Image 1: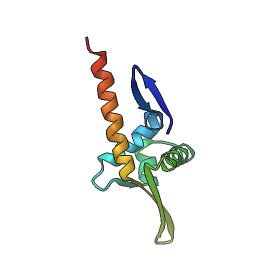
Image 2: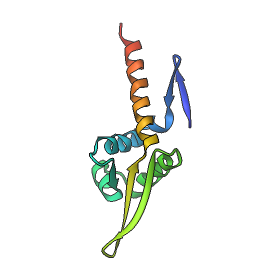
Image 3: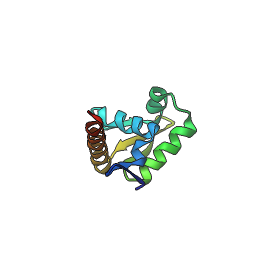
Image 4: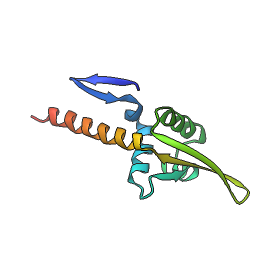
Length: 105
């Protein structure tokens, strides 16, 4: 996992990238922890290509799982937040809180 140091705090660069942070936040905030590719694309207003790349990066980190199936005659891709992803986003938020706390006067 790519990390960066900020005054002694480690920042997870996989999550810190805006697009991936939005995707993980969306999944973490949903009741089921999952969303279809089309739902994410429409909600986030990402191009198919950009969304695919970001999801692949999250999958390689183990933060999401991708399932594919057919609904009727159409393929449907679902992105599911994994336990590792839940823990990673919790840790990321904790790190951001620590950074904000250090910034206070």
